[in-house]
Image (spheres, rainbow, N blue to C red):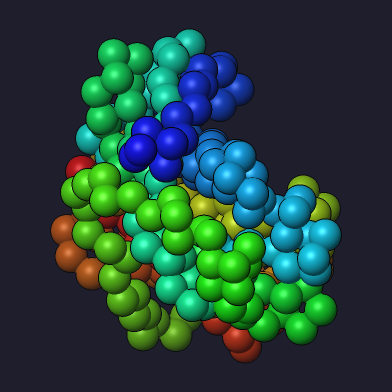
Length: 246
């Protein structure tokens, strides 16, 4: 029964999906995770296309990724995804990243809400297909911590960026994966020569749009641990992130 609840999707680490170390980039991995979430939901009747027909959509609220290793150029790998919990206003979805031998090399946790395309407000998940989404809740283990609280007190930005064409997705706002790329660009290339990312967290707070100025505030919380806050137009917080290197 649980086999029907878990979706497994196969990939290859293409040359244009890896960085200068030959490993898959965090942005590409994040994109694959979101695609797998979409495939899994669509196969079970609650995908984006079906929701859009009823003027709803999914939005990603939180994402935490923890890795022991990353697929290398030309390697095959797979991603498993399953629903851990369904609440009235949000759902927990987990992932496992498996290497070419099927061994887990990473896990991810995510939190999603369903919102109305008309009001942009959260909608009741338990009314979707009479609550049938709960039929896919699975108790498969995901042995990493849930996303935590991220607090940044730094008042001076370390970088600013004006959003451009390539940042904007089909919903008309900055793509969630683009924030990951911009945040990792805050660190010098030597960091990635010497270290790899052990844990990466994103908390999506608000939407930003074409032409917005994003300001990045970075705070070192401990050895190899950094918290980041992103504000738009010197006002509203749009994203908070945590990066832990090893």
